[in-house]
Image (cartoon, rainbow, N blue to C red):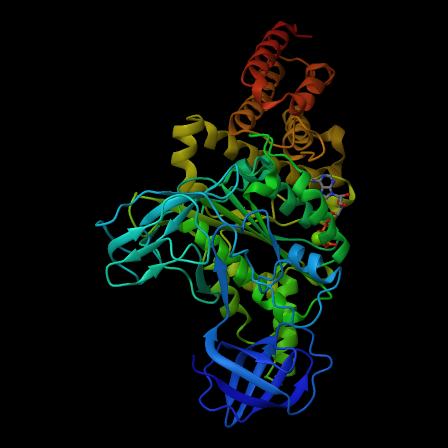
Length: 584
Ligand SMILES: Nc1ncnc2c1ncn2[C@@H]1O[C@H](COP(=O)(O)OP(=O)(O)OP(=O)(O)O)[C@@H](O)[C@H]1O
Ligand SMILES: [Mg+2]
C-alpha cells in the first residue's frame, strides 16, 4: 500500500498542520503522531496539509510523524452493527470500555465490528450464477428481528465460482467470482460518499411515528426529512427518543450529536432494556447508536452524522425502511464552526462557515425512498428526523434556516406549550408539512375517504380558535356568538385529547392511524351534533355540561385495539343525547 509521510508543523485544537507530504489527497485519512490518532485531510495549500483530528490532540508535539495511505474516512458495514454503540468514527464504545475502562485512551485501535465472529449464512445463489451490484448472495440473521442481506458491493460483478455454506466470518470471502474477486461479509464504504441506488421514488407513503400531531397534522413521508427546532427544554430529545421507540420502521440509527453525557448515558443504559410494543422484542435489535457527547473531540462529532447516514444507507440498500434520528444538528454545526475558525476561514453568518448549508445538504440529501440496486425488486428508505437547538429559541438563526431548506416537515416546538406541559409541544400553526398533498392518496385509500377532510377541519378549527382568542381579548367570551363559543370549546377538546399525547401513558404512547382517525371523527361528531342542537335553540351551556365532553377527552386512554368500537359507541351516544335535548 502506498504510504505518504510528513511531520507535524503546527497544532491548533482539533486541527493539525503537516509539512513534507508528497502528493496528499483531500479527504483521505492519516495517522497522526506516535499514538496514531486518526485524522482527515481537509486542506492542502502549498506544501502544508491541514488535518482535522478525530481524537484529542493534547500531547502531540512538533515533528512527530504523520502517515497517510490515501484512503478516505470509511465505515465498516456488515453483521454486528445492530445493537452496537459507536462513536463518530465508528469505534465500538462497549468494546473499548471492556479494553480500557470508562475513558477512551488515545489511539485505541479496535476493529469496529468483530471480524472473527462466525455467523450463520444462508446462501441464496449458487456457483455458476452471474451476479451484479446489489444482488443478494445470502442472508445472515443479524438479530432475532433483522435478516442482514449480504450484497454484491457496488462496482463488482461476475460469475460465482464458489459460495460458502453455513458459518462465515470476516476472515475469508463468502463468495469468490470466476475472475478471482472475493466478496466479503463486510464492506468498507467512505462516509462522505452516498451509496448508489437505481432511482428515487416519490414520497407517497407516510412514515408512521404513532404520534397524532405528527402523523395526522404534520406528516412526514417515508424517505422524507423533518426538522424539530426548539429552545432549551422544549422536548426535542423526548421527540427523537419517542420516535426511536415507537415509529413503524425496520431500522433506527440514533445519532446523539454533542448532547450532554448524562442524557446519552441514559440512552445507553435504558435503550437495551426497552421492548418494542408491537413485537415485544428488545428495541435494540433494530437499533444502531452513534454517540458523541459534548466533551468528545469536535471533529469526530462532525463525522458522526455521515457515519450514521452511511450505516442507514447500507440497510436501505437491503430494502429496509430506516429512520435516522439526529439530536442535535446544531451541535454538529458548532463542530463545523469550530474547525472552520481554527482554519481561519472567512466566517459567514454568526461565525458559521459559508459552506454550512452545502455540507448540511450533503447529509439531508441522502434521505429518500429508493429503488435499490440488485435483484429482488427492493425498495428501501431513509427518513431523517433531526433536532435543531437554536440559541434562545430564535428560528431565524443560520442552522435552523439552513435545515429548513431541506426539510419537508417542520415540527416547531414552542416554549409556551412546554411550559404549560402541553406535550409534544408542537406549535401547530408555526409548523408545516409539504408532504400532505402527496400523501393524501394514501390516506384516502388506506385509512378512510374522509381522513384528509377531517385533517383540514382540524386545521381550520385551530386557526379559528387563534382568531377568536384575539377577539375575546377585546370583547370578552360572553359577547361571542354561541357558534363561536362552540368552536372554542371543541378546539380545546381537540387540543386536550388529540394534540396532547403522553409518552408515559402506555395505552396512548403509540397510536395507529385507525385510532387517530376515529378520535378525530368523534370530536367532529360532537361538534356537528352540538351545532345542530344550537340551531334548534338549545343553550350552549346545556351542551357543555354534557358528561360526553369528558368521555371524548379521555378517549386517548382507550388502547388502539379498542378502536373503532369505542368511537362508534361514543358517536352513537353523542347523537342520541344531543338529539334528545329539547328546545328551551
Ligand atoms: N412528550 C412529553 N411528555 C411528557 N413530558 C415531556 C415530553 N417531552 C418533554 N417532556 C418534558 O420536558 C423535559 C425536557 O425535554 P427534553 O430533554 O426532550 O428537551 P430538549 O428540547 O431536548 O432540551 P435541550 O435543549 O436541553 O436538549 C423532559 O425532561 C420532560 O420532563
Ligand atoms: Mg435535548
